[in-house]
Every structure is written in C-alpha cells, then in structure tokens.
Length: 228
Image 1 (cartoon, helix red, strand yellow):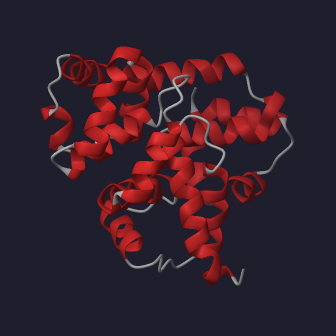
Image 2 (tube, rainbow, N blue to C red):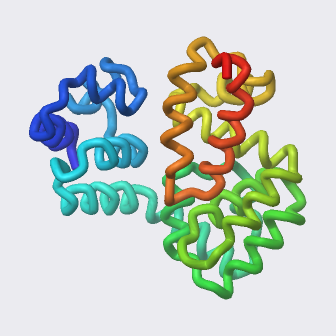
C-alpha cells in the first residue's frame, strides 16, 4: 500500500484532500506528504483511509499494506516473542515497544503464553515491563483479555501514564516528550478540538483494547476544555 494508492482510493470516493483531512483529523499537509511518498504509510493512516473510504479502498491492497508493516517489525517481534516463550522478561523490561511491534507480537501469542504476560502486566518489577505486557495483551485477539488490560490501566498509575503517552504520541502526532508532558499536565493541548476528533476515532480501534481505554479516558479529561 503506497501513498499513490491511497490518493487513487480517495479520488475514487470523490473526496478532496481537505475533506479527507477533516474526516480523519490529520492535517492537509500531512496527508499530502503521505500520498506523495514523503511520509510513510503507517498503520494508523491505513486504518483511517480504510474506515473513511469504504468500498473505494482495495481491501487486498489494505491487507498487503498490513503485511508489509508486519514484515518490517517481524525480526524484532520474533526475538521478543521467543524470550516471552522462554519466560525471559528482560527484553520487555528494557524499552517501551512500539504499537506496530506489539501488533506483530500479539499475532504470535498463543493461549499458554497469556498467563505470563498477565503476571508481568500486574506484578512486573518495572513499569516498562508492565506497560509492554499490557500493550501486547491489549492487541491479542480472541482470548478475552481486554478487561484485564482495562483493570491495569485503571489501577496502575505508572502504566496508565506510559500507555497514555504512547497513544497521544501516535494518534495526535506529538513527539514523545511532548506527549509525556501532556499526559502529565492534565491535557494542556494547543488544539484540543482536533485531538478530541482523533481520539474519538481511536475509541473504535478494534486492534487495541488499551488504546480504546486510553482514548476514552483522554476524551473525558478533555471535556472541560471543549465546553462539554
């Protein structure tokens, strides 16, 4: 899935670039750069176009796009998953993994691995280990672990802060330091209305139960700034 293919799908749907920007809450300049190949087609952009363009999107191309994103993350994901299977938590305790890496790791998770991740999520010796375990579990499909992730985000302030930072950085296009500051200071955002639109879309992210929870939490925090 290339930027050119996204542009063609948008034109088939009869949408201008400005209309697409309004629907997805990305800036016109950002979408223009993606469609021209100046910025990468991320999983979030791919999902946004797929959601808004409907039948105009070539579903086979969308699937190929996800495969390409997965392949880019696969070597690291394989290494981390092998460590998890061997009950070695060290790789997950070193640095917070990315959303894309978590998606690939989660696609590998089988039922016997889930108790290890649950234990590290709740009792991990470091916040990085706990948030990484939560991030992977939040993206595991079909094993009904979303409630456990939500409970951790509700009760563990450190995990909630790091997970919220990651969601803000990815969804609102903030650098990590800025996202941390926003998460820590009651959402002092320059453009809360745009952030709210993007976060409202994230509440429908079927691939990440943790992101859905954080987006809903952030929207509640944003309400006073929106006059709600």
